Length: 360
Image 1 (cartoon, one colour):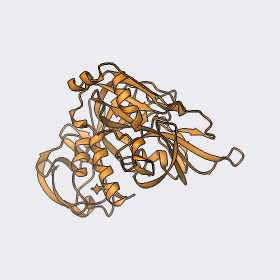
Image 2: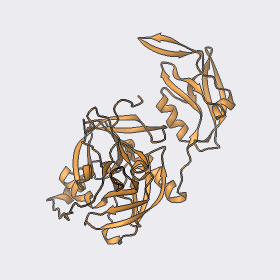
Image 3: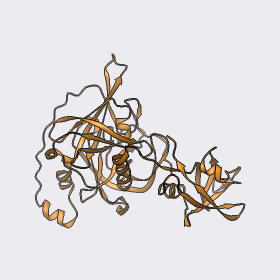
């Protein structure tokens, strides 16, 4: 389902920063360097399952606090700052975080596990997946990269751990389970982030961009949003899956930008497949002649689009939901030609569509 409702957000630099940032106007907090020792960590690591304390001991040096500054607030003209989290990706100083944490920032500062602060440079961002890469010039000796896991291996009910800086409290660890998989989040540019991870691990303002870890201490997601009536953690948080992170970060490191394949329809899941509700003018879907719904019918109390195309397969692989179709399109590159099978007036029809680049 598309997550709407009360998605908690905080206003940061340059406009809206997504849920999980915390607006701050000063940076006076002290930092204590943590020395953590855990018994039997090696034997636990050998078994592949670590305790929460062991996960923290193994990972906290790879988590950073991010302060993004820019512009002026309305409070006496003071510089406005947005605070979030991130994690070390490699020993060259690559840091991964959320796009909304650094959006519009004129300067970015990174606080490492040892309390030292460094200036970072923006490498690139991808608003479509709410991911960003920044680079910090720090000694390799203080950079402790975290390994990416395979988010496809996650199961509902699996234990996960979040580490970040909620409300500026750096080095905070919370734990929970994978509450659901294949959720959808709305990205900062209003496109859909598919295959998102839902967790009940406490995620609050300031956790944005921090890692969600499995019981081997590997990053399986990047914490990004919460759904909350109160604005605090109600046990419904969402993370961008690590397999998406792996793909997007590699592209940002290579070119600083990411291009996503684009079909150009709005859609809704129906019993037969994916109903096209709108075809945007000038898009690949419009050029290929896909047809939007012209009416609705009621089924089990829900309005079902009628009179238009229902997409049932892409390149021969069946699609049964809008999330599956979006993932299938995302697996291609702009310029690729795909075959889309639709039900039109009760008959199956295959249409070739040349995908374009997703507009910003």
